[in-house]
Image (cartoon, rainbow, N blue to C red):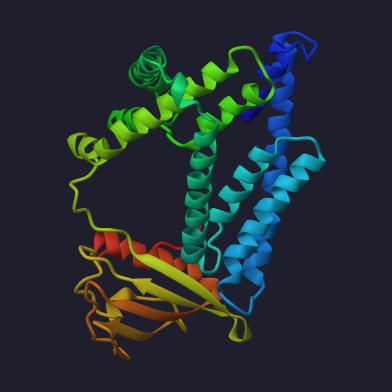
Length: 335
């Protein structure tokens, strides 16, 4: 999207020669180059972060962000899409079972919120409230209505139909949309290039994002319930935190059992964990105790498990299987 907006702005100003097909080809090449850079750097970063035992857990979120910044810099150096490189790098890192991934996820979400709030404040200063006439507001609302009712459902269907996504999920995606600072940032590209009527476009986009974020965000929960995607009190998945114990080639897993999980009522023996895997401690209502094979797991418990590194994925999968299907869930070997 960034590449398309930038290329379209340059083309409108006459700064780019060639037909739209040539420009589109350049955009595709930069995008593919960014995807390749992000994939390589993300793969290298994931392997290193999983193998290196850092002295403090707080360094893992910083390490993950460092690799994302490296992907952006490499993309700029190679004249490919840095946005695509960062995105793919983050996807690879986020799906690589990194140590302390919950802490890393929380850190990334916090940084994202701070950045987005800062962007809204900064971009709000660029807007001109005196130009928010009834014409601009009505046009923004009508444009948003068109995107919500027609354009976005069609784009969601065209993207999801190949993956057989259920129609309820498609309907929710169509209603939720993507709201945030990104559309406003895109509007600053022609504004910075002094494109004619760019100020009106920026104000229009700003009004559209603010109005539809305010109106649609509170209805997402209601819409999900109406579509049958949630009942409002669904049990959350178990939370798994992992820290490496490099000296004995083992991992230390911290597992939280949420309310409604099928792990409730299962004994430690019924977990059927791999060899040398030990549930070393259960913390219940703030009181820790060393469990035996016949001790029963309860909702709200926090389990501390020591597992050989080679069995980590299997143990995590096993806990999730029981959490969803109960003690009779089948044991799946690693693929």
